[in-house]
Image: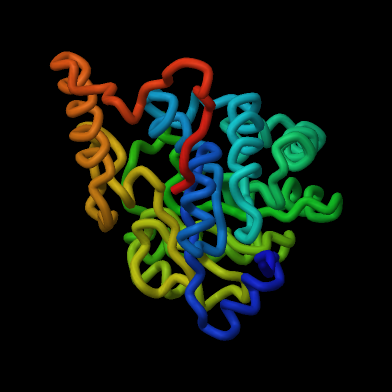
Length: 277
Ligand code: KIV
Ligand code: NA
């Protein structure tokens, strides 16, 4: 089918068609994301927290991101595939940023990269874009800066809204094709979205953004006892469904109810087979 491009996302903003974006971290979550009809798939460095079990995104490495981006790439074809540049990999100088972004595209198969920051990143964004690397920005709450800022809502004062607008304009001028707005007030998100021609993709940033993004595992509650932020709407209880299935499997094994006759091979006629969902 028709692949989603950067140009298509910008057209969607002009035509006021909301952009749906979702994270994915491996082949099956990529396939599920594709099947959902989502426009953009992000291999987020939230990988560190929801898949690798770290307490923040800070420990995630470029190797981790390349490895998981490759897996997602094998699972999707229509959505635009964006991969996060992890902590520090785009802060050691423009040359290192280009190299890291290049790996996400060449080895990982990403079509674009995302980085956290505003005005401060303008030269880096510009260099990437000039090299043919589409860049998505990320402003508001920046999880990679958690050790500095904690997790708190941004854009609560006029001053901070002005700074966010400055960041958004600088990123746009540097050539970013879109940006994530994380946990800013709805009022700030509206002001920012009206200030720039490129799409804003909100998470915890209200109804006035040009698109929305959520973490896969939050949308379907794919965890045993995970924290759910108040801005998330949960659409399925995958954790509960999966856990009850797994527990039943264990009970069946313990009670010798699995395997049964249809799961067994006998004699010479035995062949490996199965069905497709
Ligand atoms: O890493 C991530 O999942 C993200 C999104 C939540 C925007 O950056
Ligand atoms: Na991220």
